[in-house]
Amino acid sequence: MHTQNKKLMGMPSLVGISLLLFVLLVISVMVAVTLGTVDISVKEVYRIIGNKAFGISASQEITNGMMADIVWFLRLPRLILALAVGMSLSVSGVVMQAIVKNPLADPYILGISSGASLGATVAILLGIGVFLGDNAIGILAFVGAFTVSLMVVGLANIGGRSSSIRLLLSGMALSAMCSAFSSFIIFIKDDAEATRDITFWLMGSVAGASWEVIAIVVPTSLLMVLFFVTQYRTLNLMLLGDEVSITLGKNLQHYRTGYLLIVALAVGFAVYASGMIGFVGLVIPHVIRMFVGSDHKKVVVLSALVGAIYLVWADVACRMIIPGGELPIGVLTSLIGGPFFVFLIGRNAYGFGGRS
Amino acid sequence: MNSLKADNISVTLSKTPILKDVTLEINKGDFVGVIGPNGSGKSTLLKTIYRTLEPSKGAIFIDGKSIDTLPYKSSAKKMSVVGQHNDHAFDFNVYDLVMMGRSPYKGFMESDSAKDHKIVMEALDKVSMTTYVGRDYSTLSGGEKQRVILARALAQESALMILDEPTNHLDVRHQIELMSVVKSLDTTVLFAVHDLNIALMYCNKICVLKDGSVEAIGNPKELITPKTIKDIYEVSAEVLELKDGRLHVVYDAIL
Image 1 (cartoon, one colour):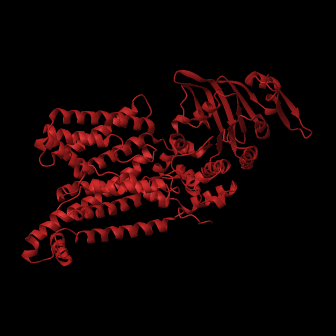
Image 2 (cartoon, rainbow over the protein chains, first blue to last red; image 1 turned 120 degrees about the vertical axis):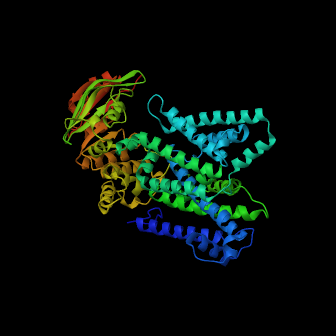
Image 3 (cartoon, rainbow over the protein chains, first blue to last red; image 1 turned 135 degrees about the horizontal axis):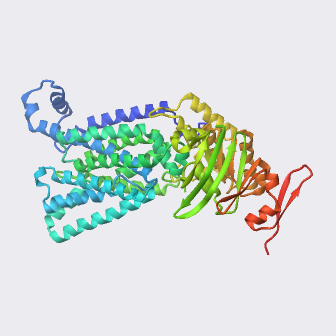
């Protein structure tokens, strides 16, 4: 049998590469937690984690000091959040691209981003949701994102069959409406400071990470990823289209709606925890496809792992680049992702899933 | 599968009736060609049979069972489809694409077995594409692509194969090559076809469609006549018999 093509990668090598990436991810987190603007020694970092996580005894000085707070309440939660969000956004990107059968799709494409922005705008400018407490912005953004996704699905299903095109167009229409609403509110309120808040929120950040947020985002992201790992056959069929899929034994209608809702939920949680982090969900799937082809058996797992590693390091960079300050992670991912995407476009060998 | 019957089906698309009371029966071993001009409903008939369109009236029966009662998975085990063009926005390699023919046999989370691998490689062998196994589908020529799609249909191990004008974009050699592979499979075939000479070469039964209705069903040698051709295509033609008994359609120019 010819094996001149690396894409004919068997199960054993897929498992091998996945394990390798998993180890790399663990090492990344272990190294990343020792890096930061505050100089804490590696030994101290692990003493603190050992104490907090596993109850290994350590001196009072270590466990209750500022260092402990930095490691345990700042660095570690945001690394874990970055990991979960990176995983979640990458896999959502893969699934969205399959759902709408379009390599340009990203997790935010079907109205999720403008729904989230509208939610955040309403929270910041109109003060709605104050009773929700600290994370009112995140919660309303989640509500906005999820509601708009539901509306997109509903709209695409009116009058019979939903299709990728109907979904895309419904997403565009509702996005435009949400953006218009957001702009309208911003214009009417004319509040410079609040507008600045919204802008910052839209840039995305994992700085708001806390163990409470992680308790929601990590399990949901993991469940979502594991679910889609099992769905590779259906995802593959989606790329072949509705007709071919029916002749191969699967009616995609309900799968599309179901997948979309799961993705909307996962992205909604990501938005709730970290705002809008751009380009991850678009670039990572394409990078993976460049190496292994379109087969979702490989693409889903590898995107999850690489997406997680990417955001972990992006967060480290965000904390280190500006001395004494912090770059919003969404700005960085777009700063890196954009040129990288340009590089991909320039490479003739990669046709974004297809081949020109 | 021993028989498939389209029983008195009508199909209406955006309020336009496309098929009117079509009845067609296909029995085991048949090589049925559906002929008719563009817009006569050939593709609609096939699509209704392979379930991407629903009849507004009538039903399709496989072995006496209405197809509506079957899950898509079951019907995909009974019939496979080779369509007219098969390009996608995303690319797969040949092996993965043919492996998708095994989808109807797979349960939730079930992975590809050694048996699936064997079936895929045998299917590729039957269409002489084993050396292309790792190639990207999009880098193949039109004829090669259709052979891969044919291999995918073979991997479905279905008793009925539906060919929806699969040779449309192929040159003479590749048309004959593809059809010869199909013929050699000894499977039951339903075939929408434009080229009457190809129909004469391979089919043992012909269904003539005109304006969404069946004009005639029967033996190709008896049906493909200058009169039928004039009737349905509005073209004058002669049907010549060669020394070895084969028939050949020669068209007159339209002046």
